[in-house]
Length: 273
Image (cartoon, rainbow, N blue to C red; front, top):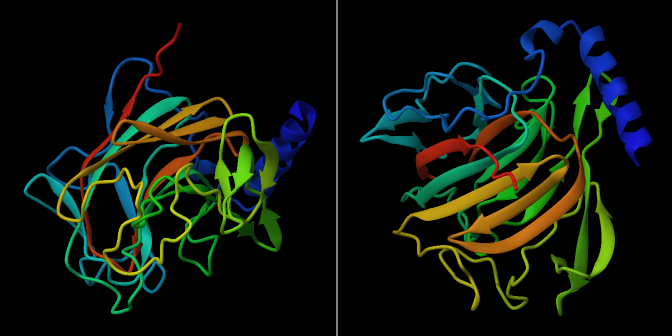
């Protein structure tokens, strides 16, 4: 697998170089070895850039704003806030709380944090996201992992990972240590105790949910070490994958039709033995 990954990395980098955007990428992904990196300074969006499917780098509707020490995402439209730099080998600590606005539908409030985001802005999901691995924040699904493939010109940017899994009563794969190893290139990996009877309706909860209630803050940690990702929600380890590709990139906060607030967005060094 190591040889395959190296060939994929070389192929992807050659595509990026050929597209003329290599200058926009960090020469080497950064790691927070010297201490905590605050991706949000609590005052403004310095170090973060907005992308919206409809207006691209412009934000005329003020979808992304800062007040009271929080990032406010109005939920209007589809897009994200992206870090300026690419990162690898870190523990991401994120705290979020839902707002009032929804997309007008009956389904759960939805957002996510996209890890290892690669390529130009808007290269995946009809121009809304980047090629990345999503850690889902949606109600009842917080901690699910989803590979989001992208495109660079006419070439697919591959995104994949593996995980030990077991099928639930709903036939969906969930993480379980010692389970059958599955490769994910497009389908969702559900968190370990996802309720198979969960109806995914607005403001409902699964019987084993570890995320906080809607009006409280939820803490999500994504430990990205080498080609492995471990997801921890409110202190509970609930998902894990390995042989991720890519294994480094930007970090994105999603806007996906629902209002959401973020008050902590920071990287910690990995604990070494």
